[in-house]
Length: 122
Image 1 (cartoon, rainbow, N blue to C red):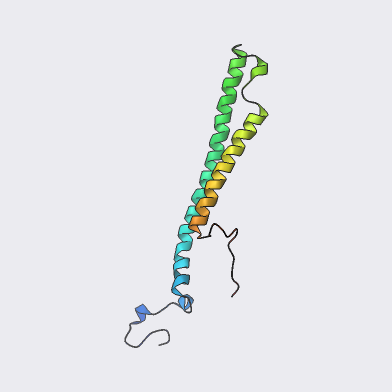
Image 2 (cartoon, rainbow, N blue to C red):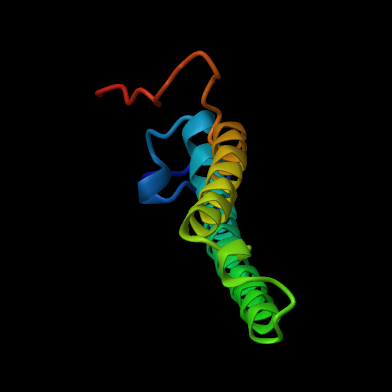
């Protein structure tokens, strides 16, 4: 009856993979799926906000071209220029990146003063 204590039924025994794991290790294994789900959500938000930014720029470009075609503004006074496109995409990426870093540090328990998680060798 290896793996069981006297008086305990076999249903209470530890699995072979759990032998030698501390409580902290078992909690970390349980949290891994939650952390994975949150990481997927963060990446999905990153992709969605960038797609929405491109759509927004496309709508602005449409209105800009329509105003030029209707002679409401001269072609030299266009609103959407390459620098506007790069600024909007860059700002979106930086903002969501900063939020993702803050969330990831909180989710994965990385202290603010520690730049990268340190993996201890066993």
